[in-house]
Image 1 (tube, each protein chain N blue to C red):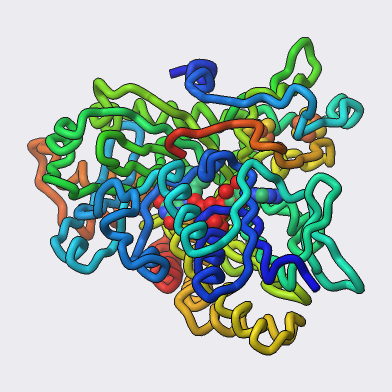
Image 2 (cartoon, rainbow over the protein chains, first blue to last red):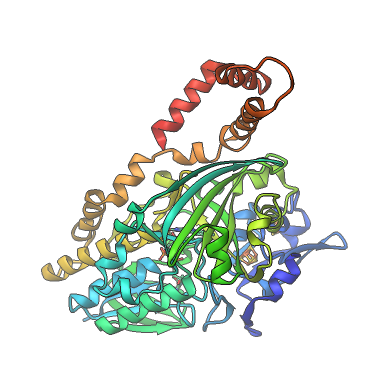
Length: 90
Length: 430
Ligand SMILES: Cc1cc2nc3c(=O)[nH]c(=O)nc-3n(C[C@H](O)[C@H](O)[C@H](O)COP(=O)(O)OP(=O)(O)OC[C@H]3O[C@@H](n4cnc5c(N)ncnc54)[C@H](O)[C@@H]3O)c2cc1C
Ligand code: SF4
Ligand code: SF4
């Protein structure tokens, strides 16, 4: 099963007014490895036309990218107000 | 005067257990959980080892959402084409209440309900932003700009402890501290699961795998656990090795595992009903921060109390136990009205006396064995060669097993001296 299909099984309560994770495009521009794209299990980090694209809406709040990015680009906070992923099994 | 005797940050096994124990001791406790409902953010494999729930509730065996009790436990090495398996099935497991499969979105609400019933105040869907400090002491938490005060705060935030890290109570996580956990829950009828895994009634099966077929030096362990009418399957991937390869996607490993020739048949006709992912604390003793200070304690995954040695993956049991120890230390502190670091050091003492710190010390350095080329590549392929040598009929004279082992070692370019040394190190740490 493709990752996109797997993600489509999940329930989210997306916070339209708060992006809990942000990246610094200037740092990503210079990034030698783009390890975030391999590490993120929800494929939130992709390279589009040579540029890093980050999509917080699919994030499952696993915490991986906070460790994976070794260049200080990722600032990671918890979602607020019960927003974000809602597992039914976990 | 503080508003609460205690604030517990996080309603997972560690935080909920702490809140239950505190409330049972008539402490005025606030439990803050960011998930709504509790458990909706959490992922475990998961086998809950031991009877920790029994220390929280007398009716746990009747009311806790336990999927199955463990009856069979296996460990297996997977290579591209083979599976080498060690099976252990025993009636002792049920009698001795050894372990249970659980799903966190069911277990956590049960735990939090127990905290409420014991008298804790519980808020869900609320995220603690940071700690409130005064004269270097923790005096409460800040949520959405508001301060809520307490004599002490127990941080039980799990494997990505933002509050502890942002407050400088724990170092930012490094590759060595964590692994990436990915998981699927696959729906199958109860009857099919029973037939497929040779189970009856509420008996369950659990297996840990070494995923020796992975390429590019990536190392990961797999797990497969039976629930009542679903299978939990997943992988725990070493951050360090994934980074070194820098060409393998974490989510693809889940797929590769599930489609392995000896895994796929176990899942046949099943429907993937959920995909999930979460960091796993893996660093063992070397990841554990200072566990207490003026007005605070750290419990569960937030404190690094989790590890795997390839045979089991444990964390929930340590979370429950450390949550209880933190609560007990705080009850004593309350009696003395002393919430200083010196007073809360009782927490560390209690952990040292319990199996939590004893295990962490016994398995010191285990992560270096769990995550080694020896376990993930050399050993599986050697086993495969030896097995093939034993069973393949080539019309030639057969060799003794020992000779097969030596041949296999020399083809893997291992010296017997190194093998002995590695084996010794492994056994010493396991
Ligand atoms: C894939 C995988 C498989 C695993 N398999 C097993 C297994 O088979 N057996 C086993 O024993 N262990 C297993 N573990 C480990 C186990 O899940 C953890 O050790 C355990 O969950 C730790 O419990 P905890 O209470 O410390 O943290 P968590 O369970 O993570 O709970 C932390 C809680 O705090 C909340 N929270 C976090 N920050 C805040 C905040 N700022 N404000 C409010 N709330 C907050 C979270 O929402 C969460 O509910 C596995 C882990 C993974 C990822
Ligand atoms: S987030 Fe980090 S790892 Fe990813 S592209 Fe940016 S700098 Fe590189
Ligand atoms: S927290 Fe996990 S799912 Fe979310 S963006 Fe980071 S790596 Fe991806």
